[in-house]
Length: 251
Ligand SMILES: NC(=O)c1ccc[n+]([C@@H]2O[C@H](COP(=O)([O-])OP(=O)(O)OC[C@H]3O[C@@H](n4cnc5c(N)ncnc54)[C@H](OP(=O)(O)O)[C@@H]3O)[C@@H](O)[C@H]2O)c1
Image 1 (tube, rainbow, N blue to C red):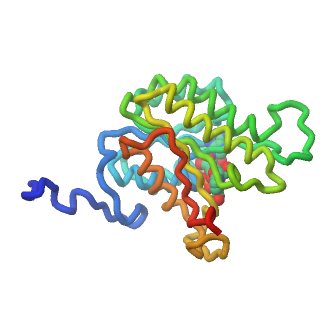
Image 2 (image 1 turned 135 degrees about the vertical axis):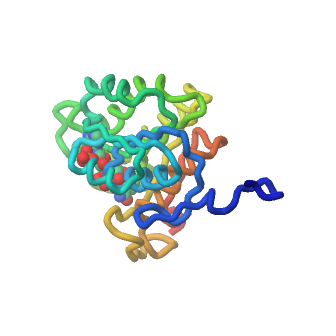
Image 3 (image 1 turned 120 degrees about the horizontal axis):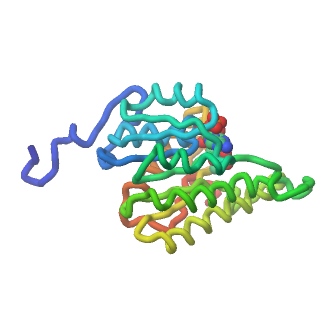
């Protein structure tokens, strides 16, 4: 029953669960959310919020045991696919199994060398190839399966704008990923495409103290999941890079 204001009772908007976030609205009910990298870290943090918000959640990662353990922390509408983003031959089978879907978050960031001084026998040995190229070629196949009012969120990081002396190609890959989000937002409209740029995220901890930002504590997986679900559910967000950094950029 709605109130005179047109709002449903508060209980319709809030979900309380020991394993899921404190406050979640139900905007993802009847939506299918795919998370490549959803079995751990920021992908799992996002999966928890999306699942609590009513979504059917599909987790993709390489380690089946980790996927199963992640699945136990999520709602009943959770599926898992064991697969490796660096194996393009498996994309068609994943996409067949997933079917049409609404939202995609790729947090998996396959590695490779990234130092300026490293030796690179071929580009395939580089972080740029592992992270950027596999994201790009997966999206080339996946976009046809995304509903027109759906969204894609790509993973960048603070090194995109504040390079680390040892991780030259991480900066390049993150910056390329951000540019890809903007270019695809134009190419794929009305599908919305954004990137998230987290900084100082402690994937095992919970707001661990730090002096490197304004907040005085590191972010956690929930903080990033919250921001990614915002990008998924806000119909006016596209072509943006959302910096979630506790104010690091101002220190
Ligand atoms: N921590 C930070 O402060 C920070 C800030 C900005 C950006 N980042 C970036 O964000 C990325 C994700 O961070 P996170 O903390 O969420 O990492 P994480 O906890 O290590 O989780 C990575 C997820 O991706 C999956 N994965 C990794 N390689 C894969 C592959 N080749 N194919 C399919 N799935 C794969 C992992 O599962 P499997 O291992 O089972 O495949 C896991 O589910 C980092 O790699 C980093 O580039 C981190």
